[in-house]
Image 1: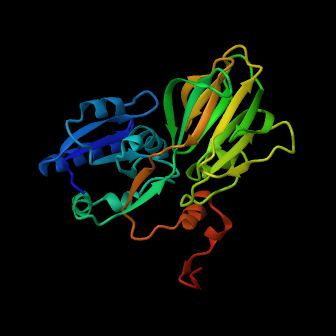
Image 2: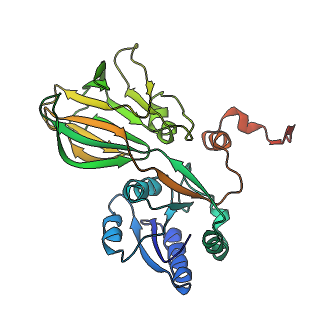
Image 3: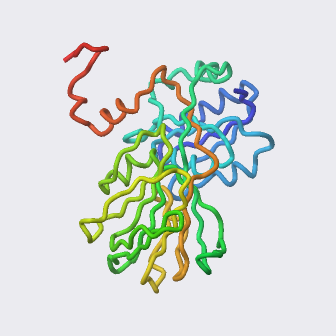
Length: 307
């Protein structure tokens, strides 16, 4: 990997993350690399400026924060094919990040990247847009939105908690009409996040699939469903005449859905690319550690139990 132009995004409002970002910027600039640096957070989105300011190909995005900071980077940078090295500096669970202890010797990290001594984890993403008009000849309205975890169609109201009525169609065939708090359309990566909290299945991130999960459905027969990655999902919010229903991407508000509009969701053409510094990576160990599964009470060295 060449390191001629690098993005560095640090967690907004977190001093340690900013300090490490500044240190990394100095070291990379000393190696002749151009650095674009800024904070990323709920009120800070540096990526449009980064992409507009780039004078040449962006070789890498270094993201210093937690899963939320990483998700924001993936949404904006993965469609551009930019690989992401995400390091847990100020994060909590850290499902998507590399451990901070592997990032202590930053000069060694730059050497490893320059010498291609790393692995890449490719993660499926979803894309969504609003459509209106006839079902057989819909017209796209507005922009295309991306997510790494999930698309969420859910009402939001200041003074009440409205129940949504959501009709779902897959590849032109009606699946169900849900009365629920909302609907999740998730990737395997997102299956361990909001979808898991809504009693959806956990999928291995190495596979491609789409998970549709209603949030707190009023019918006990309503269940999550896993569909092929090439499927096209169409979602109609019904009975909302006050513009309460919104489209959320990875927990961030994307847009409001006007009456008569539907949301189309499909697998994005571009995958997220995450740089792995660990010599070995186990998704199952991540589940045991992060979700504190019962298996985490017992440590094994090969086939031998340690304690």
